[in-house]
Length: 312
Ligand code: BTN
Image 1 (cartoon, rainbow, N blue to C red):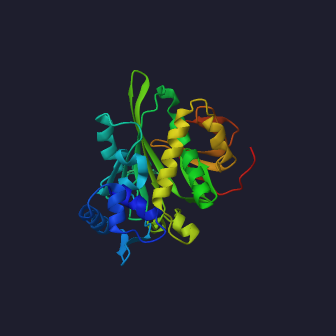
Image 2 (image 1 turned 30 degrees about the horizontal axis):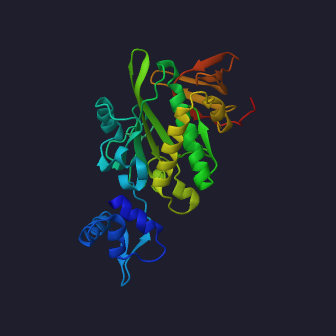
Image 3 (image 1 turned 120 degrees about the vertical axis):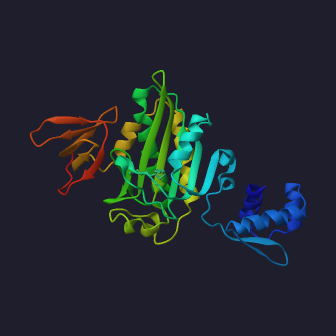
């Protein structure tokens, strides 16, 4: 009901009377009034004039009813320890493909390599549970699909020149706009689920905790609705995962800033330095070492080193 009322108010160009809403939705005026108050309590700015209700501004809400038909798949939390933890429980209890856990803030946001992910209000923090029916050795496709989807959503919705950094970060210039973390369970050589956790700096102030990070608000000079980024990402991801023949590595290469860069790759055990020269068809980074040898890197965190990027 809240979804429907918000939908009607968003579409309306003039104030909507309680009577009109109750007729359109087939519920009593008392029920409409109750739902309007419920929406106000959750932060919606709805004014009541002599001719009816007006939604003063769309706001930046992530409640399930903001996501149309996805509503039943969206699990929203005002505060979570980490959306990864909740998502794992849901995945283990057989929740459907594309179930999404989203939190307004996280108290124990997790980053890669056991780092903390600063998760203040205003950022977009979610984990989507994917069941892609892929053999284990093709799971890289899911991660690269996610990077391409997110980079394109940011580019298309905001006009920001987002690039992808191996393996899954989105950068603007040299600054980090998002982070991605994945957890997987397998069964009989096949992926059972991949939980993809994504934090996007949207209307938060990430540079306090991380000087090399930037938010969409910093770049646009104004707030941007997180709902639009999440909806765009989920739509794109769902569509792309259906198309098994898509050459996602080729697409990723169109938007990468990694190839040609001097890089330092850090894994939990090792550090490797060289120049990134390619990403192969399995998603591994090919690094040219100082002595000219080529090293294939399957996983790790990539840091750009100072020095000019070169064409490869
Ligand atoms: C990185 O280190 O770059 C990965 C950061 C991933 C952060 C996201 S926020 C939503 C999800 N929940 C978490 O605890 N971590 C991921």
